[in-house]
Image 1 (cartoon, rainbow, N blue to C red):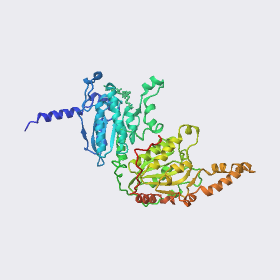
Image 2 (cartoon, rainbow, N blue to C red):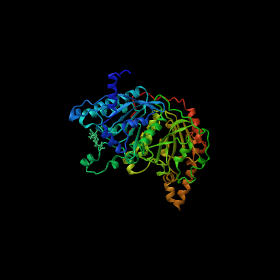
Image 3 (cartoon, protein in one colour):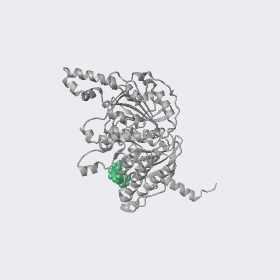
Image 4 (cartoon, rainbow, N blue to C red):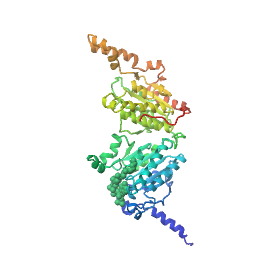
Length: 517
Ligand code: HXC
């Protein structure tokens, strides 16, 4: 038997060393917290045996604060490429066992390298983040490293999908980079995101709070709107990445993948004809309407717990990816407030970036009135939604199921914002105001002077309702393209998507727009 070449043996030794991360003791600590290692995460995320690591031998180059004593191959991050459902993705996975996965100058070089490769090759980019933020010992070099990453997050936004999976206590820059990406997934009770942790907050403001209450998944899913999805375990989070990517193209010049469905595209659904109650003040559940129209089981709601009066999510109709936007009339009557406007805006823009047609379901009495909303800048936030729908060039289909009053009519993918096909259900009410409100304003004197003002108001409201609170006036003026039976919605959307598949809508040349953020 020939002896192994010592150079091959040396390489094998180095490879084995790189697999050790921060050492057995720290790996044990990681496991004791119920966490997977950085390498295990990659294995679970990717198709079997497709991962190829790059730059595993990079180490930090610092000599500050005793750094030279502890050098680890890879410097706390594993980078490379592999496949998800047969499509190439680039990724990095931070190793908390090496300096808490913190970002050094060299770690930044590694991350930027895979980001550049992802964009050059038109492939999605996935960040598995488990990091204490900037590596304190490296000072400005680690902060500069973050700036390099943020710049790429921004410049590559809308070029390839960028996904962040939060898998540990993510502080400072480790929270900012995800905020620039298309999707942030958190693991319940395991991941935290904050710019400054509980200790710093206590020192600066005197406020006392624990990490979970400050930046746990519940907070970011339901209060701040920073996270898009949260799941119970790391495995679920990694599976979620695979699912999410199945709706998206690999880059902005491709179309989303077609996924064959057994769900008949021409399926009619009688249930929908009874979905909207006869009493216009009675709520119904728009989520159910959506679930029944899209291909069965394909609706992936994004940000389900934040601004619940608005609904956004990905789905497939007839096997094609669509972005669903709508109101939930069962929550605050589907009114549009600041958070709802922000949520819908961001989603509309993501779909437009990645050639995902938009299907909008409208049932909203308008923008939420109130001092807090006005002073909070509802004009500015609502304007973002107008901006997003107006600039979106993907196929846009709108279905007005019930109320489309005033501002809500206009901002929610209305025909002259450039919507390609606008349908109304017979239950649609398209008007500047609700009937009572309109009667109060238009006939103020007449109502005040009437012998029975309340009867008079009711009568005038009825007259207004008969004229405007139905889809026929809008249809007679061309503001809706057709009035359809609710049960026909699926096949009407399928037909519209097919007719709009080759839509060409170039925007006027410009450097970039100036969205009112
Ligand atoms: C260097 C760090 C570190 C850091 C943690 N470690 N954070 N090393 N720089 N920022 C090291 C620890 O020394 C320890 O090393 C190992 O990582 C694990 O940390 P522990 O504290 O033992 O773990 P845990 O109890 O789980 O707490 C994790 C933590 C905490 C919540 C992340 O360590 C922490 O609060 N770190 C500081 C966070 C921070 O303020 N970062 C700077 C943000 S500012 P050993 O050797 O024991 O394994 C920033 C600037 C960019 O990021 C700004 C962009 C806008």
